[in-house]
Length: 239
Image 1 (cartoon, one colour):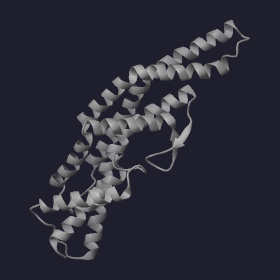
Image 2 (spheres, rainbow, N blue to C red):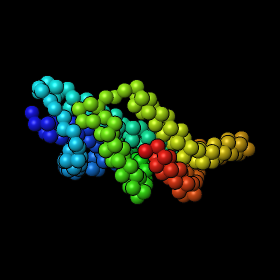
Image 3 (spheres, rainbow, N blue to C red):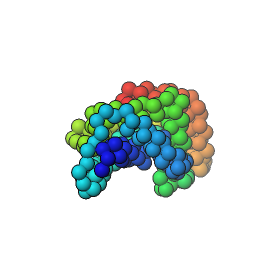
Image 4 (cartoon, rainbow, N blue to C red):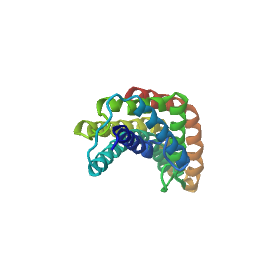
C-alpha cells in the first residue's frame, strides 16, 4: 500500500474517534456530514504536513493499527466528554434537589436527561466555542501526532490516568457550580420544616415546589455567570 494513503487512514481514524465523543462536535445537534467533512479535511491537512509516511506491509496490519488509532481518538474525545460531565452533574444535582427533574430529549445521546442537565451542557458548549476552547481540543489532537505518530497510537496507563483525573476534576467542578443553589435549597427546606411545625394547618409540601422553583431561578441568575467563568478557566487550564 502507498505509505501516504496508510498515513491518511490512520490520521482519519484518530480524528473520527475524537469527533464521535467530544461534546462540541458530537451529539444529535451536529450533522453527521459536518463531522465527516471536518475529519476528512483535517486529515488531509495533517497528512500533507507529516514528513514520515507510514509503511504498511499487509491489510491485516492496516486494520489492526487503524483500530488502535480509532481507540486512541475515542480516548481523547472521552477526556473532553468526561470533563463536560461537570455541567451535567451540576444540572442534575440542581434538578433532583429542587424537584424540577423534568426529563427532556438528550442532545448528546438518545437517553433522556433532566432539563437543567441539558441546559448546563448547552451553556458549557457555548462557553467553549465563545472562548475558542474548541481550538484547544483540536490542537491537543494535532499535537498527539507528534507524541504518537500515525500507526503508533497506544492507550497506555498514563493516558488512562489522565482520563480518570479529568473525570474527578469535572465531578468536583460540577458540585462547586451547583453549591450556591444547594445551599439556598437546604436553608429553604429547613425553613419549610420549621414553618410546618409552627403552622401545621399550612400545606408546606405543595408550597415548597413553588418556593424551590423561584429560589432556583433567582440563585442561578446571580451565580451562573461565576460558575461558567470557573468552568472556562478549568477547561483552558487542563486542555
